[in-house]
Image (tube, rainbow, N blue to C red; front, side):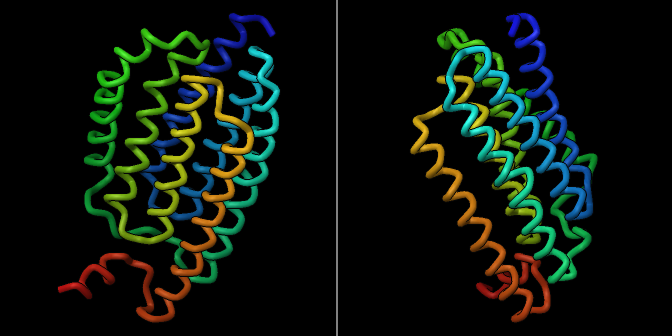
Length: 219
């Protein structure tokens, strides 16, 4: 693939991933949030294929295929089914409103650029400019985990952080060894399963999956 076309496709993917993180901060419905995560994971998958084609790192094809199966199809489907069982169609409890969330997300993007700018000069991969975007996705995912109060949405924040981490790894070294990457995907899948089980049990015990209910138990 031509270097210019590859560069344009890489830029398109990482910008789309960042915009989907911002979009996730504006949604109040869990189904829409899961759709945003699935589409973000789809762009991550496409990015892995583009980088693999441009650099010859064939292991990224395998990781892209696994990411598509697990993150684009498997996890969103499982979490949507869990949300239906919990009757958790709408996320109404957040620490702050949408305008405030977007302002802080924009500030986190600026912080990510300031932090990663010195590092980008030391990296020689074709995806080095993605490093700031990856840090932005990680920080926004962390911000979502902090500000959302339902277990399901906090789990999506964690998954988006993992997408940002995967993007960062590709930015620096075109990915980790295949065995390590598969282990990470397995860990993420197990985390989702555990969160789903705990969410079901929390809902049965407290008739809610609002994590602030659990925090009040400490008082």
